[in-house]
Length: 69
Image (cartoon, rainbow, N blue to C red):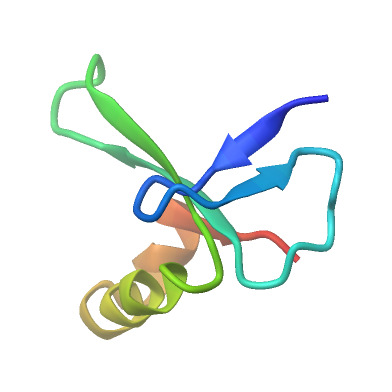
């Protein structure tokens, strides 16, 4: 069993739990293909990021952030 930790607040969830509402995971790539940042955010920390992506990136945000539900 693997645990996933929120990168912002440190909250934990079990990887085996598929229905964790509000948790998001994603990868942000830089211009260089060598560098990327992977993140997991809990349901308390994720709304601000999701709102930012919807507002500034629009349809592109669906490729960057995948909701886990």
